Length: 408
Ligand code: PLP
Image 1 (cartoon, helix red, strand yellow):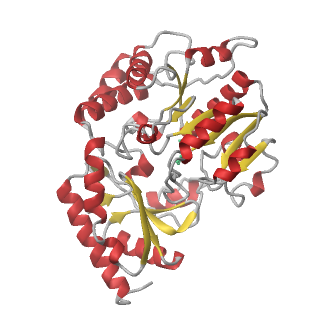
Image 2: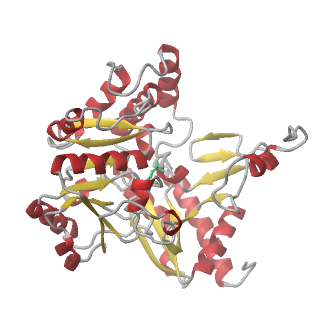
Image 3: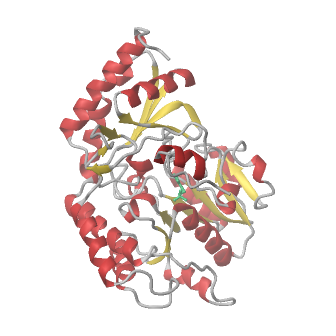
């Protein structure tokens, strides 16, 4: 029998009873959070430069969001499975999203997470086109469920889980010569308009336009995964606006729920109707569009839109990274608004920098598929003053590393 762990600390219980995905999680306990800061029980403030992996765009403790959650919790939580009853928060959220999206993106399917949005989008593309294959990209990350894993662009994380979905065609991002592999057998091409976990890889030249054109020629649907780039992070409400390329299906999650679990795949009403017949019930979810999550998302969306926070993102991004590229330790800085990769000369330097940042109570992390880079993706509400101060600290840490001081 398990002992009840009565004398163990929560940290010890964390390691004993929670399933972990790595052996060295930071395992710091934060007691509360406000703005861009997380606080330990001793009141030490850590600056969140990852925004909970691009979720907390509005920072912690956003009053309108908290109030919306409180209010909705007092009205009702779950009613029934998604798509059966008219639930006000879901309808309000869908209407808000559609209002700011192009006309072909007028129908929203609400789900629970990014991976589920991707799963739904891939299924939808198969229904709409009647085709079997999906194309995706080297170093793409779309989630960890079997379908999303099948289109992930990294073999190391997939190998032990094979067999996965058959008929996945792998393309190289920015390689025009690979577009010929998009044929009339392809139901959809799934792409992050800016590859996030690859270490913030931007589309070059007219690449996305060429991709759109090839999809139009072959009848393949273009699915944009804006799970990380959406909701203002890259300096536009959605990254596709930056490139003037409209997808057939748009996937959102992460910041969409303003801190609550929520995802969505969005397409035309005509496309979405294929999930409702022959057979009906083409995609089901019990909790998708949970009313409390949807209410939080509505409030978050209103704050984002009324503040036009995305218009401030590029400037603050520059303040955050100003002059860092002069460090000989840094090979390159890639960024789209507040999705930033500091790319170091070696993976070891990236690890040393990360350790030092944590020691300075700056929360950052690595990217899944770019071992030399660290992410800077703070809440979009970060002030110019805060960005400047963090920039100073980053310079100081880099200088110490350059001088070989305390190099791990
Ligand atoms: N797509 C992208 C671009 C992501 O960055 C992620 C998560 O990091 C996902 C999909 C999967 O989202 P979730 O973890 O909510 O399933």
